Picture (tube, rainbow, N blue to C red):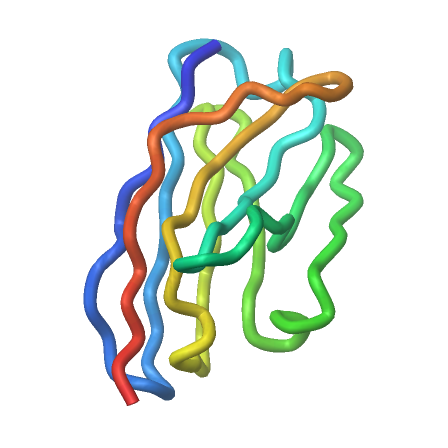
Length: 114
């Protein structure tokens, strides 16, 4: 299954963006799906994840601001990002897999201006 993220762009601090991730096959086959990001000069970090059972986890830095969701019928993964901060600036990647290492798609750049 291949993944492709989209929806990034330039937004002012306090604004919102919705990222989308398309998959070439059944998203259910991945079982675990999530969003990672890599900020300039930083290591990649997990932002949020959701599994087939609907359980979600979030990085502490985005709790209360970001919401991950899936549409299994459309094989789509989403990340709603609200109250964006300049420190959220990064390339965002969608990924998934039953167990590590996950499969990653091409990222989408999110830039938050102050």
